[in-house]
Length: 272
Image 1 (cartoon, rainbow, N blue to C red):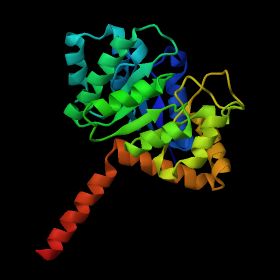
Image 2 (cartoon, rainbow, N blue to C red):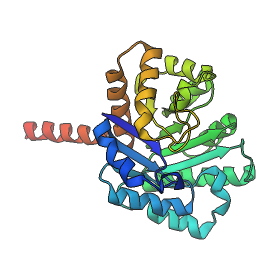
Image 3 (cartoon, rainbow, N blue to C red):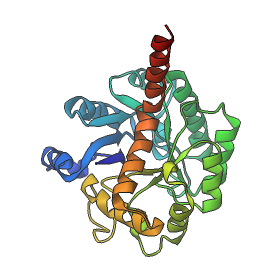
């Protein structure tokens, strides 16, 4: 089974067939989905999806391109939503200098505030960083470290940058871009990265893998990402799905901590 760590099924691209599409996921090997919000309206839509579908979990946060809509009042509202049932991350947050539709200082302010928020609510973060590697790293180093860490979504930088994020304890999100002909840097990263630092994602409805590039993306296309990662690393597709799924559950569901606690309790019972 495959763990989808980043999708936007609240997007209007799915308004016509959302229920039918989501009903197909499990039978096609997708057992868990993190639906990630990007603006204030998508927060509520994401929470509704998590309520409706047992296999969908929610990430609550404001994308850098929408950070201009934040103020103290709705930031307090956002914090309240972090305590809703099935919320497993703060995201997606970060910096985006490609679109340049929100001033950099505003993006930086709310990126830092949302990093701090993740610590307040004890959740990992999903970080969006486009054309802003150095500022992203600088803010992450300046602010108090996020205790639960997180993932650098849709990674697009060099393996040297990947190394810096790894040293900070973050995972790397890999999606359909890895199948693109011009994705040399990302393929180098996939070859370089430890497999236990990679998460699978689609960013649906965006960034469909080859052979569907340019069309609406969905989690049903994740096997193409799995196949490309397996090819690059010279391992089986089953191993890619197994390890990346374990990585995602460790990050978002905190399963390692739960398992450690069970083991500790077991030892105490034996000693008692």
